[in-house]
Length: 490
Image (tube, rainbow, N blue to C red; front, top):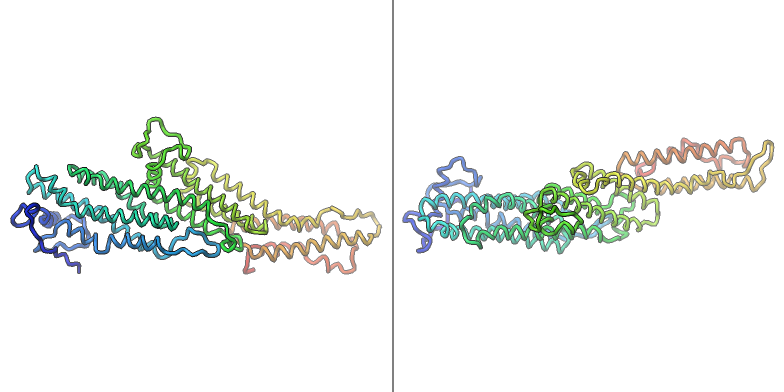
């Protein structure tokens, strides 16, 4: 059971104006008169000793609840991110998200608790303290709790700055719910602190500015880190599947969606529109508060497009690590397709198309280009079946040795090329079933049709005493072999 007994109360000549209890202590009675109040769920308000504001808030402020949030964020940001195959520097830590969300949520609740308790304190104070002393007394009473609250916020900003230094950008996302809550409650916060000293009223705006600054810095450095993620052979998936950099980038952007208004305003508070080549409305000024919601949306859209553009450039660079151009094409195809499908399955596509109307079509064109590049790898198989160097057969004429050898070489070239490609490409991956089936079917049709036409031309031509040595596969068998492409279990 939570011990709600307050610490022994001491009276000072400056702070105690009531014989039986000071204004701070009487908050217990005020809350007792409001049974419907649920400001601090889970705390038993016991009769007997009084429970002052600073002590009440300290139940949440420490030791532990809020400090755990900052400490956990620090631990989260300091966790080493070792390189691994198919990996990138943008790896979210597993098993931390839920715990971190709970701790940050605790800090958010403490912000609300402070406002509600301060309002209750002031309401009670106005009934006890002479009017000309009320504001100054209230200012003095809330200082310790307010300072502790702001200190924890500053610690979160500090931990976020360290996370940026370690390129742990997923940890930075914890700032967004806090910042959103602070901005949503700013008007009520300002109203509650009305009449206090300027230094007191400026504490929350200062914290908000710090969070916006570090958040915007994190977003910009995240975008740059995507472009500069190193091209290392050991980091590349051997089967050409989706790179971890791609999946982590999309995951980051999807999580950013939950705070798109906060992120847009964060970017707007730090930069002007011409940074992203976005024209400013002539009615707008350089003040962050004057940016409209539409402008913030366009700014965030341009930022996301910048990230996706950097990702595309990095993937192109990474694809050159592969020696096989066909595997390079499969790699780019998989990643472009993953990006497109992810955009379409989330609201990201709506944000992207704010500034890039043809985004979907552009990705589809890129995917088609890579399919064409991949299909070129089969030319070394099908080019053996063309009419080039094929002997012109006259009715009743006998083939010369050189002409018979040409036909044998064509069969052998086709057989060897087919076996080599099927063996190699069987271990490649195309995770998207629809795309995998489409590519297989297209390749089966091209190869099978060409092979059948070649066999038709060679009908009734005696070019060898051992035809089974060269005519190794029936068209149906060729199709079955192609059907097993991109399937390691086949």
